[in-house]
Each structure stands twice: as structure tokens, then as C-alpha cells.
Length: 153
Image (cartoon, rainbow, N blue to C red; front, side, top):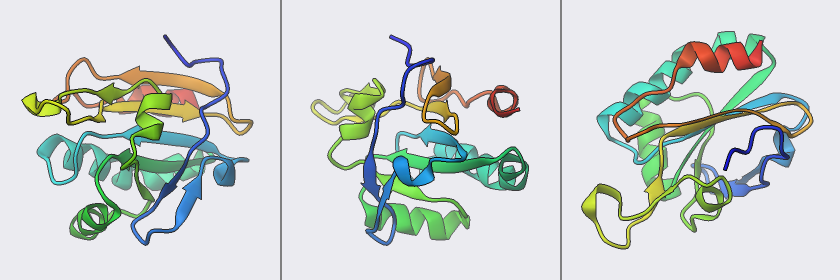
């Protein structure tokens, strides 16, 4: 079921310094929420580095970017350092956000019981409403970055 046109599910997740970041704290700007399956994997690195390299343009569209994975804040911190990411990477280790957004990937990579995030992007407007949603058909597919920017325009 699509979340477009509905209030974005609230979240409060730890960043790489184990400080809470909530969706509410980002209110007043558009927010690009990029869920990704796992730090240190090729497609995830490419995707988040693409968002990093587009950050000035996205900020110019009054947007903030956050990445969310189920990895621990410690792993995410090393991932941020390795890739010089300049936006928050949040840890959904309890899987609350992936479940709320409907992007939980059960038995990820053939591992029974392991739940990761499906690669997906949501754009939330300044008032907290989801205005764009994309969920990858499989973890190897990157988002349409032009479509994300168009949703922000």
C-alpha cells in the first residue's frame, strides 16, 4: 500500500554518534528518506555517494537527506567515515521504521530471520506528508535520482 498523500510515519532513530534524530526535528524542510539494505555493499555505497554528491542541489530545493539502515550506529559511523557522507545515517536496529514504512525485507540475502531495509526512497514535504515513494524491485536497483529531484521541485 502506498504512503503517498498520507502523513509520514514518525521515527526517532540514533545517528552515528548515538544521538536521536526524529522526522519531526526535520519539519519545515522537505526530507528525502533513503532506506538502504546494508552498509559497505556496492550498490548502497554508490547510492549514498550519489546523494552526497547531489546534496548541494537537494539543499537548494529546500530538502534534507537522511539514510536509514538496520545496521548499528557503530557500523554506520565507519560507513560514513569511509564514504565521507555529509548527511545523517540513522540506525533502525529495532526495525521500527522499516516496518512503519512497509519496506522490511525479510530473510535478506537468504538469511532466515534477518530483516533488512528494502532499498527505497520517500520524499516528505514540509508539512510531513509523503509526496513521493519508490521501492526497488530488488536490492541491486538504484533509485531514479532525477525522479527524486522532480518530486522536490
